[in-house]
Amino acid sequence: MSAIVLKDVWAAHRTRGTVTPILSGATLAFPDGQAVALLGRNGAGKSSFLRLVAGTVRPDAGEIRRFGRVSWPGGWTGGVRGALTGAQNVRFIARAYGVDARALLDFVGQFSELGRHMHLPFRGYSSGMRARLGFAASMGVPFDTYLVDEVTSVGDAGFRERSEAMLKDRLSRAGAIIVSHSLQHLARLCTAGVVIDQGRLTWHDDVMAAVDHHRALMGIAPPAAAQGKGNPVASAARLQLR
Image 1 (tube, rainbow, N blue to C red):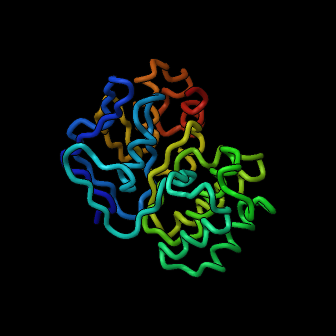
Image 2 (cartoon, rainbow, N blue to C red):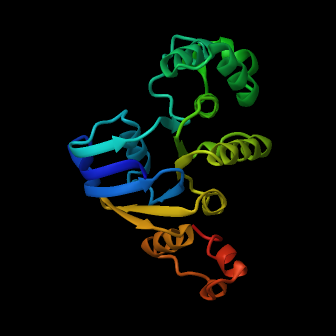
């Protein structure tokens, strides 16, 4: 069974007369309940792809079908109202997704560690605070598929560890599409991978095969230690450069 299905999807990013393809006739099905790494060079369209899957951005053509409840991109807060406080925005999210507002507010407050800032206007938040609020709110809602965009790189080491542990817990009963510059992070969380390049999507059943594909596109040769297949040292070596 599939969680997300793309059928001949076309989408492009337009800025000051420049058109950059995000997807060029992409057709792909993401399996239900599987954690999938999304890899690609800077500017390939990874964050835009997550917004397309979430439904916050519409494709130029084609169809994207979602089965089950799909999150917004974790850490993305484009729909949050700047004049409202963090707490008020969390209550709005709770109503929108039909979950208990008090329980979600307690969870977000404790996990995000925003303290008194929860009761201050969101427009005054730093980018890190915004990401922490968005990620905590997404983890507090039971989704079937989580969309995660670089959130576990926010904050200090302790917060990053807690974020990864929380995401692992959610992935024990849900699927995800995860974007991260940390290949080690993707290897720990994901079993499969998709590489996005010049509007094309390439699926790999093995996340390490996706890592190797990404490295090849970046022009980074695999270390000598990575030549041996089935060697755990080789797998670790393939993750040293990105």
